[in-house]
Structure formats: structure tokens, C-alpha cells
Length: 322
Ligand SMILES: *[C@@H]1O[C@H](CO)[C@@H](O)[C@H](O)[C@H]1NC(C)=O
Ligand SMILES: *[C@@H]1O[C@H](CO)[C@@H](O)[C@H](O)[C@H]1NC(C)=O
Ligand SMILES: *[C@@H]1O[C@H](CO)[C@@H](O)[C@H](O)[C@H]1NC(C)=O
Ligand SMILES: *[C@@H]1O[C@H](CO)[C@@H](O)[C@H](O)[C@H]1NC(C)=O
Ligand SMILES: *[C@@H]1O[C@H](CO)[C@@H](O)[C@H](O)[C@H]1NC(C)=O
Ligand SMILES: *[C@@H]1O[C@H](CO)[C@@H](O)[C@H](O)[C@H]1NC(C)=O
Image 1 (cartoon, rainbow, N blue to C red):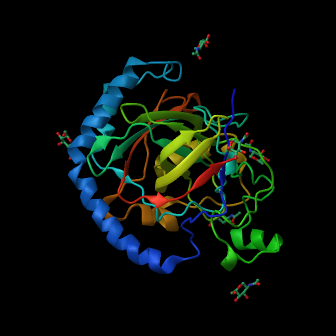
Image 2: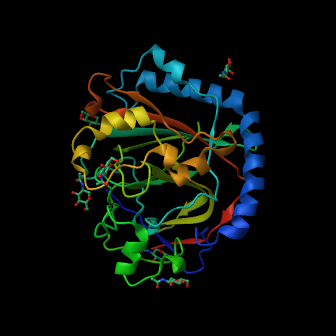
């Protein structure tokens, strides 16, 4: 298997949580505008989802072989769209260098298998967006991130930084480097097909201190492969976080190896700071989940979500491949 790694260049202008002022201002106007776009695309989202169910029920390829979903799942079909904005933070465990081009990012991580079935829609045209790179990273069943395995998931971020001799007020996402190793598990990216869809196999994430269970996702346009096989990204149109329903989380967290994470209490969606930002203006960042076997969740879950991206709000990021 070929691995591609992507390295952020020094000129990166990433949105940093450390600069709330102007971004907050812009964010409100942006979010209101996107909420309008989102509503306008409702019918298209429904059609988009209907096609997706059909495709999965037909069971193409090996990843969906075990999927035995039945008609009742249409009941969970949602017409609202998860619109991920560039203003949602990529968080401290953002490390593009370890993002790897593949459709199964599990590696050796233990947990409940999760097939993410993602649709990407251009909110400007309500049409599926082909050929955009969808990029994920999340923690393992007990809260650790690859590339940061030496940082404890049970210690809050300012304390971790202090231990590293850094001050949290100086931390800038994408430029303050606190990675501890080069492991790549639970980090992966894959482009959308002509129907605007892509699938990524992973495990259901666990949790770390002060955060609800989530998966980071970015959508990049204008990516190209170089002759030597590395990737170059010119633009990021969306940076967001995906969540799950509390009732499902409760069930999964009661299973091993998740249940062994007892050092801290899990933060619920309803009290998570980032979650409330993601649900404003009618956005729905909660993944619709179908269990492969309702009576045995350990067999795996299929998670569906449509990411509406605003191609007119491009974060002009210049990436260079390593
Ligand atoms: C969702 O869209 C479908 C098809 O366009 C429509 O029939 C249905 O009423 C919509 N449902 C909701 C809850 O808006
Ligand atoms: C699909 O799965 C079968 C059985 O596990 C395996 O023999 C085959 O190589 C797989 N095909 C692909 C394309 O991965
Ligand atoms: C998660 O990753 C950490 C750091 O590598 C590791 O110590 C821990 O065992 C992993 N959790 C599970 C459930 O494998
Ligand atoms: C971190 O920086 C802020 C602002 O520069 C300062 O007020 C604070 O005392 C510093 N904290 C530590 C632990 O150095
Ligand atoms: C978790 O929450 C319970 C109930 O509020 C509390 O008794 C317990 O001490 C907490 N555990 C940890 C590790 O914080
Ligand atoms: C690939 O090519 C680019 C541009 O020429 C170069 O900067 C990069 O180091 C190369 N990477 C590898 C792994 O060869």
C-alpha cells in the first residue's frame, strides 16, 4: 500500500481558535447565509440520500457486503444538511502530515467498526460535489490521537501545554507543533466519486477530556497528485466536527474497550462547547447511524451524513506535500 502524507507549509493561514474576534463576527453572518443555502437545498438532500440508501442496499464492493439494512431505515432519512463552516476549529490534534490516502483508516485500533458514508453537496448549486478530498481524524477507543500518543487523553489541554513548556494563549492551530510521533491510525482521506460520495472505514471514536465524542472532517478542493505520488491541496472549503446521538453513545461506551476508559467522565453533546456551535442555525452535525445487527452493535455501524460545503467561502490554504 502506498502512503501519502501532506505537510502544511510555513505560509499556512489556518483559522485558529486563538483569534476569536474577527472570526466570530464573520462567522455569524456566514452561518446565517449558509443556513439559507442549506434550507434551499432540502429537497435535493432528500433525493441525494434516497439514492445513497439504494446504492448501499445493493451492496457494491467489499465494504458493504455485511450491510443488511432494511426498509425501516428510510425513517431516519433527514432533509437537513450538516453545513460545516471553516470557522469550526480543527483542534489541537490536527496534524496534516499524518493524513493518509486510504479507505480504511483503522490500522490496529480496536473498537466497533464504523463505515462512514459521506455525501458532499455544493450548497451553491445543491448538486453533489465530485472529486473533493474528504479528510478525517479522530481519537481511539480510549481517547488518544495518533501522532500525539504521548499526550494523555485525561489531562486538559492547558495542562498538557504547560507540561510541554508552552502557554495555551500562544497556541495556534496548525502552527504550534506538539506532535509526539508519526503514527497515522484513525487518520485518512479519500475523494468523492461522481455521485459526490465517499466511504471511510474506521472505528467508533472514544472520548477525551472536556469534549463530546466527535470526528474531525475537512473537505479540500483543488487537490492534485504530484509525479512522485504526494498530494497538494490548494483550498479547504470546510472544517467541521461530526457527532453521534447520546443514546447510541451510551450503548457503545458500555462495551469494551470503550468501557475501560474510566479515568474521566465523558462530556455529553448537550454540554459540549463545540457541539452547540455546530447546531446553530439549523445545522445538523449528528451522523445518522444504522447498526448492521441491532442485537449486536459490535458487528458494526454505518454512519450517513451529507456535508454541505459552500464553495464560495474557500479558505485559501496552500499545502505542500512532504
Ligand atoms: C423531505 O423531502 C421529501 C422529498 O423531497 C419530502 O417528501 C418530505 O416531506 C421531506 N420531509 C421533511 C421532514 O421535510
Ligand atoms: C473481497 O473480499 C473477499 C473475501 O473476504 C476477498 O477474497 C477479496 O479479495 C476482496 N476483494 C477486494 C477487492 O478487496
Ligand atoms: C489508544 O492509543 C493509546 C496511545 O497509543 C494506547 O495506549 C491505547 O491502548 C489505545 N487504546 C486502545 C483501546 O487500544
Ligand atoms: C500565559 O500567557 C498569558 C498572556 O500572555 C499570561 O497572562 C499568563 O500568565 C501565561 N500563563 C502561564 C502559565 O505562563
Ligand atoms: C464522574 O461523575 C460522578 C457523578 O457526578 C462523580 O461521582 C465521579 O467522581 C466522577 N468521576 C470522575 C473520574 O471525575
Ligand atoms: C515530491 O515532490 C515535491 C515537489 O517536487 C517535493 O517537495 C517533495 O519533497 C517530494 N516528496 C517525496 C516524498 O519525494
